[in-house]
Length: 97
Ligand SMILES: [Zn+2]
Image 1: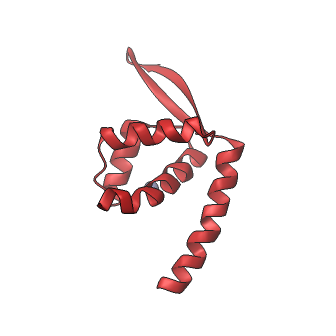
Image 2: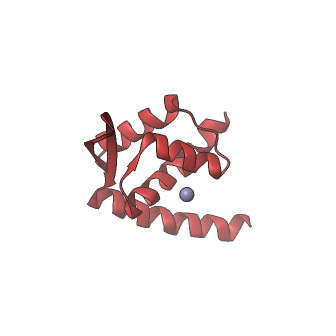
């Protein structure tokens, strides 16, 4: 339930961080935990994958210390969605708070 409710915020948060730097799943798990969202690999990886399928993120494989890791960058489409989401969040915050 909590996950269903916050998944939109989590997606926007992922897009935001991907717009700053390329991100990987494990880093996003730590980052979301810092913000108080206890999201595990079972949620983060499918979410990253679906954002890529929809064209908001683009992945590339990077080898770090012999381990292959998938890093995600924001796409032009993702950036537009992020900008739109910011407007929506602003409007919502104004009403709710
Ligand atoms: Zn953050």
